[in-house]
Length: 336
Image (cartoon, rainbow, N blue to C red; front, side, top):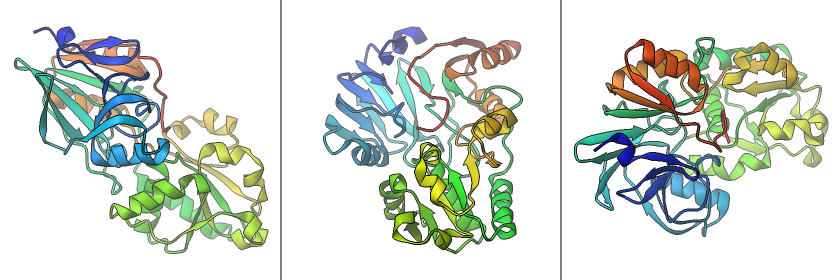
């Protein structure tokens, strides 16, 4: 069997003809296998959805209980037969519930990574390297300029600023699913025990993380109307990046604008967004991790879904690994 007989790109997404299913389709389909809950990968309207229980829960929180006609939970490491094709979900280390999907038939194994990262993250299961014949990888930060520093260093910079400017509120922009909860957890790991104030858009997902046993400490709503402006002096306030462009953000006392993203490695990006304290914190692999992962899988062929495809394809070719971009449309660079 050729790899293209087992998985192939279509306008809806990656399609498996023998199993008649799609992986992370961008349009409603009959059967969808979903890697994780970010909205560019997990969409509503499919007839059937197969994903980890946590991803199904997250989809229900975001889209309502009727987000799909039927749902099936996949346990990590358990092999499921889907139309004669063996399917196994492995942890991706990206956000809570995230998984790589291994598709296997007639001795050929292809692994679709979804989005993933290798560095430890206490808010989700750690990435697991899966040997395969073909590895399908993202390429969000697939340029040598992207090398992420340890997250503890970035959290340390945030806490140092909080200590230096006790009269100012620190507003941290972080994507609602995964990044925000990771920043909260890292603050707790660093010893920050004061309440963290959160935008309403983070409330449901953060509460869900807590019910899954991820202790984020005391969280309080960041509602300026309920108190005086000075109540937030010295506070850490976390919200979705979009919220920091509206009137809500301007109500805090002399706010320090912060943004947690891998893109903060690019100084011009931080400047364009008016970010005073850029925090290089990403839930995607950096350049070194991408290369290390490709080598580790032992794959003889690599397909690149979205991001900086050209550089990664070129790197593979220099290593003697056959590679090609899939040019899939509909996936974002980072976050949701």
